[in-house]
Length: 271
Length: 271
Image 1 (cartoon, rainbow over the protein chains, first blue to last red):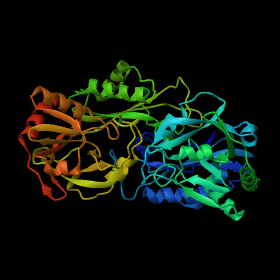
Image 2: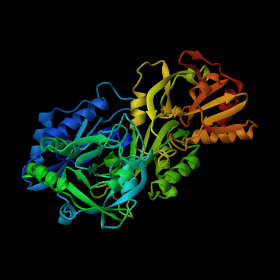
Image 3: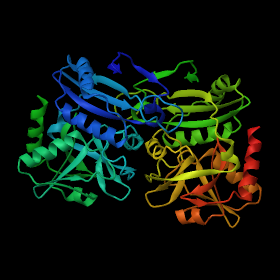
Image 4: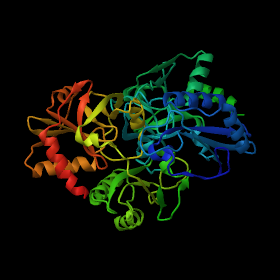
């Protein structure tokens, strides 16, 4: 793994960093294809939204691009993780009005997922862990990820590729590392994320691409019954792309035409 | 500040540590008085409860004591922070069944709070930030602290010593760094923390001491009206002890006899 911390080739940060002390920061997980980050602008846009929400000063985007380029330019396929924290500070939750952020860039090997995940689809686990509702943190990709850690460790069965999370009010929200979509009577539906969840870069791209293809899209409350009644179900993120869901709670679902059309549409961004 | 990481005098951890990546860990903030940690056993007990909840292997308590003693034995008054994380791991939320925890010990200067906080009491801010409800994480002192960061930074006014947090259902839960108690008709009341909040070591000590003094105690739902109607209000933690609350939303409250009696009772543990 290659790592840059504030532009320097290092691999350790101060224990006083607020990223460790409080999870006071944000991250992005970015696909690298042929030495480029195809969805770079979208990731930076979400990072800035997260910084606004947490009153963090976002590092200059050209500096981020320069450092990212240094790390990824020789990689045919890799994953770049950017972490931005509120830097080191005095003891306590209060932060100085002008804090210096820590920027961490980590470039690691592309995960070799089975090609079947994309082609024939995946089996998912329904997580017992429920997401809390917190509008102040919903949507952004912050460093407080204990819910995801608990949820992901509910299953060890390697034939299960993802877990689906509901919130405390029985709304279906997302996967542990992905967003969720349903197709119902030709309409593309994805959960409202104003109270829980991470608004993924791939989720946004899919919503845009669907509109361009003339597919009606809806961001709405989704219940477990909706998933079971759906014609098509899939999960997505910017590294895995789109994986059809074909098995949830022993109910089998076919891979449908809308899923295939959207897989083709987003794959164009990854060449 | 003196720091030990896994027993070594170091001050940096790997960026791959899950404590930074996901906030996957716990902490304790411990008062050091005359080279000793008077509430050590209680802190270790809570740390173990947190480890159980997160399926973390708690480091051996004698090892923790040995390392803590190294750091604190020459300090007349200091604060010891222990952080336990799930260590470094592969990319992703899944953790190995046998992961090696990282243990961090940080000994820092005692914060010089105004003596008036203890004697004449404090003014508190009512936070707009609401705590999410998450029974899987409630009670334990985990590293996902963005809610507290947001809440603490709602005010800059130095005459305000603490902020009071409600949950999403209008229940009063705690302060940003403290637990809350009310005295109502001679009964000592403190919020139920089964859905949100941190069950403080000082909170437990106060509940025990009150019972010993023949004061009736209740752990229950508390609403803002209950705080406004209370005869006495105070906040507590193991570093500040007990601070009477005398001003909340411009309502003035007297420092009462039960608060004074409990201040005397817990101060005996700090000599």
